[in-house]
Image: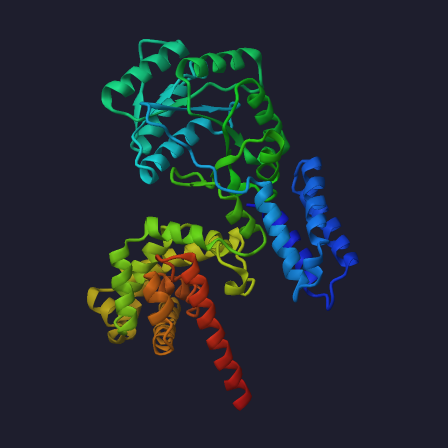
Length: 496
């Protein structure tokens, strides 16, 4: 998401860094380019204009020009303004002591309301220890209520069917009663949508809101519709009074105009973004982290949270122990690939890492698909080995390699390539252990992904070691180790 805008902003700010001395003229040129980048990203015209003027006012402050690195101060101002543009701070769902807390999901037909209802319910159960109950009051669209039942089963959340009624108000009354009787603390109401906004829809939503007194009214919009999503949200807000926005299909939106405009236009924040088709592919919307991603600063906090939520900590610690004692086998390598796959595609992970850590390298979706295919091929090769061969690769002679290649549908050359990558990875781990990197960053952060990621990139990257700890630890320790290693390399080159 935001790829188009991100590329243009990073190029503009990189050009500023290239100036020997920064002048107001340089900033004027940069701001014109930023304004065009925002407009091309389908950001509301007034929002883009106000954003640029706000950056200009702050960039012309005396403290910026008197600083040691004016271009860095300008980058900081752009970052702060981007985060503020999108809401400043994250807006979580706020629950009260009443039972049940009602959350209404509203929006136009086809925006993804039903799927989002299931995704948010699962997220609340996993992350806020809520016990949600779902109910659909869409009595107009064929099989709409059946669809919610399918989604509820997929996310393992209860659903109130109310088979005896086709009246929306009767359904919500029954659902509230059912929630009270069976101890559900959250009621998620999946409301009906239309292909366009009409008065009957709004009246029905107003009646449901008056009956249930929801703590949240979330408007679901397709992010790829850009300013149309913003305009629809504004109409719903005027009639119903929404408290937040859920943007779906953000993973397919290279522009991001809706996410950047909606808070400024309607005054209500984006609370969740859908980032994929799977039921766990939904994230709380953090404006500061999104601003970091757009400017190439990475999003290490989200990556750490992903790892903590999806990687078994005991397994990661055991893998780390094996790495540091040179006991890391092909069986462990296969296990790490399985852990790595839980985190999503390679392109997604690379976007969460700071540019200084990746050397500015990014991976396209096509390249990511190639990596995913390679991971499956690697797993197939290792699966075709016996336990003895996985634990001691030195027993692999020509006849064994031939058998493994045949069993995995690969070639002997591919088997040899995997073994070379594995050997390179073990050497890298030994070097990192001798250099103290495992003792510093990795041990404190309970690593465990370095092997899988390093192997997929050709055996030379420790960037996957994220398993716990804080962002401050990550920043301080990894930067320190990196600077130390760079100094050693420079001294080695001079001696040569």
